[in-house]
Image (cartoon, rainbow over all chains, first blue to last red; front, top):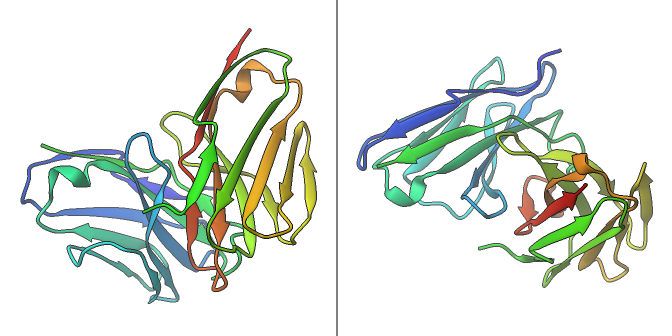
Amino acid sequence: DAGVTQSPTHLIKTRGQQVTLRCSPISGHKSVSWYQQVLGQGPQFIFQYYEKEERGRGNFPDRFSARQFPNYSSELNVNALLLGDSALYLCASSLGVGSGLGYTFGSGTRLTVV
Amino acid sequence: GQQLNQSPQSMFIQEGEDVSMNCTSSSIFNTWLWYKQDPGEGPVLLIALYKAGELTSNGRLTAQFGITRKDSFLNISASIPSDVGIYFCAGSNNAGNMLTFGGGTRLMVKP
């Protein structure tokens, strides 16, 4: 069975540009969460979506947005990129909104902003 | 910013030694989780703890959920080279819709 798949694996963008990252959850999982992991730090929560609705939002500016599609895949969009947005962006899927059990992470998208 | 303080930040040990790392928080969490992250990969769940005082083992790994619900520790016994990686603690809130991660403990094992 396929795990959580993220695309692209690596990306280089210029300051001010916009980027879209994609995530496909494990089959049967209806919830997708996004995390940002800056080099040398732990992941930080950005969004959680369940059944196409936003269920949680972390402390990130409005430049960050996301959505979930009917097939439960998800996109994370970041506008007006800053150098500080350079990070590993992780997607995690789970059956639902729960106590942390069953959050399976993908390998991430490495975004570099130059 | 992050609310979980994880220590130590790094450890360099001899193969066969036992390892201990811990995590403290200013907030109460209902669930504590321990993850391991290898280079180029996402975090992989090692142990999940759901009750204050709970002690759970997974092979050579043992973790405990502190009674105050503000701390947790992870022990690794008889370390081996494949234990190398970064270990993260994470706490889950009441809604269970987000994880708060610690800063990580980088473990290096000398054969």
